[in-house]
Image (cartoon, rainbow, N blue to C red):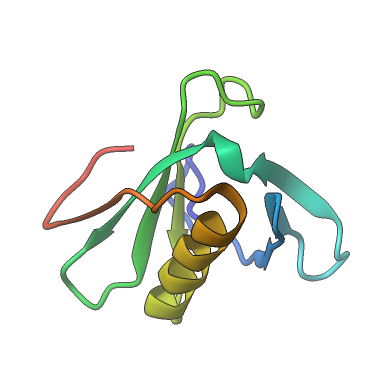
Length: 105
C-alpha cells in the first residue's frame, strides 16, 4: 500500500473474500482496512510494469472519507484477474478496468 501522506510504501497482506477485500498488517495479521466489494467502483493500472493498482471507491463507500487506495503488487495481473472473477461470480458484474499512462487517486 502507498501511504497518502508520505508516498512511502507499507507492506500489507491482501485478502480477497466473496464479500470483502481486506488489507492487513503482515506482522500482527490484524486487519487495517476492510473494503466491501460493492464499494469498489473501478480499478486503474498503468501500461508499465510498475505494479501500480488504484482502487477507486464509490463516493458512498463504507470506508468513509479515506478515498481511493493506491497499491503496488508483484502479482498485478493475478490480483486484477481474481478480483474481476470474484465480482463476476458474486455480483454478476464485471470489474471496470482502466489501463493508462497516468491516473489520479
